[in-house]
Length: 281
Image 1 (cartoon, rainbow, N blue to C red):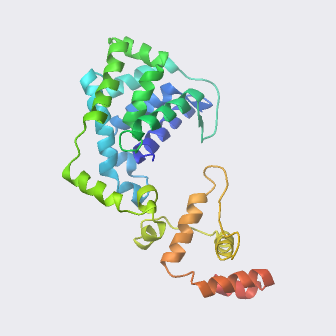
Image 2 (cartoon, rainbow, N blue to C red; image 1 turned 135 degrees about the vertical axis):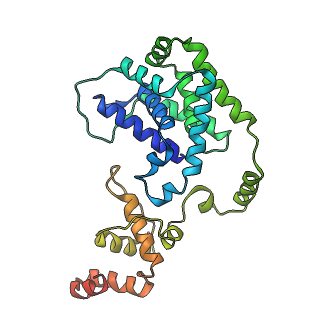
Image 3 (cartoon, one colour; image 1 turned 45 degrees about the horizontal axis):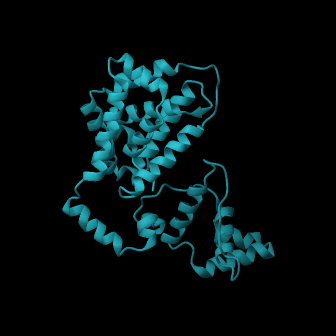
């Protein structure tokens, strides 16, 4: 499972790559994203996020603090390293619209990071990706570290070893042990996903504007006696998650009782749009 701190770091790396005129996110850009993420206050990073993400501020802070401590132990200043890497990478004349894809090398880093995370609780954090980044050894990053007056091999390996020691020797607090016990008896939804209906009932989901036709299409498919499995397909950013969250809000608010749903579907089949409009004002 990808943690919110990874999403934040990814967004910062993507912005860095786009600003520098690159068509994809490279290893050096992700290094800059990590440095910027640990440098900025977590509250500032989350202030534009939704309430659900803001509720995880403590978890995000802990993830970034883990990286800060490794940098400090190695004698690296995130701001200085970020600027040095940026100077090594330089700028290009290209202009590419976001979202940007990861480079093949960065995809491999993510795969290796997932492998590291699988033996350390399963939740992918920036620390796991940093260990993988050091293993893949980006020349521009090592050059930047050298220009800051450090032995690049010794310092970067030191960061990775410090983080790896934390994976293997981290002691769980009593609260974490209690949470682990709860997870063992939890449902698959609670362990690997989000209960959107519950979040909607708490008002933790953003409002959905429009999408009435999509709501009815979802209802129609889910109420079919056969072939009632629903899949939403589309490019990133077209609103797939928003549609599902909007449907969850209808369920939580009781605006989608079974009788109304069946009547709405029947109106669509019979092309009785006047009745349909009264059911879905």
